[in-house]
Length: 254
Image (cartoon, rainbow, N blue to C red; front, side):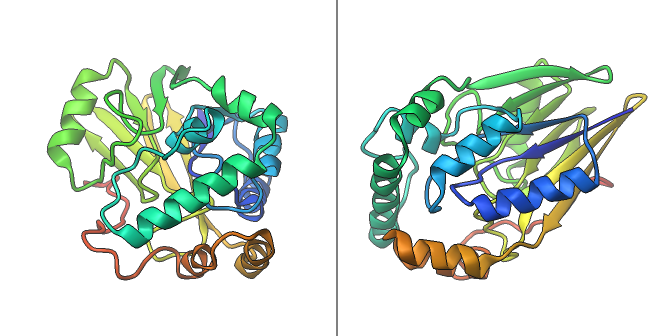
């Protein structure tokens, strides 16, 4: 039997990351993997990168890691709202300006995908999909999920980007999204990650929610020069007015 920790989308939120790492220390895992987006929106990009690196967390490149590492003009996400687009560009510019050259270079070297074996099961880790680093794949997208799993040579497909945690078994394979450590969107402000256990071929995924000091991070945002909207987002655990947000649930028994 082996248990591994899966996380994603830390987004410069050191307080949330430390809370998750504390929970992992209390409930040990063999390894920790991250599906990308270490930076963006949060006030502590350098400290998050250094914590991930020092903890030996194996990480793939997210779209924000790519944009900050290569100093791109946009993060690549399709955003309809002019207000949200302006906030995204503001976040990206701030993150580029406040991430050290050394850490930007480290982000540029992150792999797009990691494949590994865990107790006889093969696992593929990406930020989004093989087709696009910015593709949003929700648990309601059953046709797309089936297509991804049929194309993958792995038994378990792990990705992030949506900030909504879930796990689903389809045709003998698994797709798993650990949600977001530092910027949840499911109206639960607690940090999210998944403990994936493989035991004699049986797979189980436990969504873990970990409370952290959101107000401390909100204060750091206020002092950093980042827009106050990012603090409000953390307090609410997302945007309650967002349209089309999928229901978040664990479909392990489906």
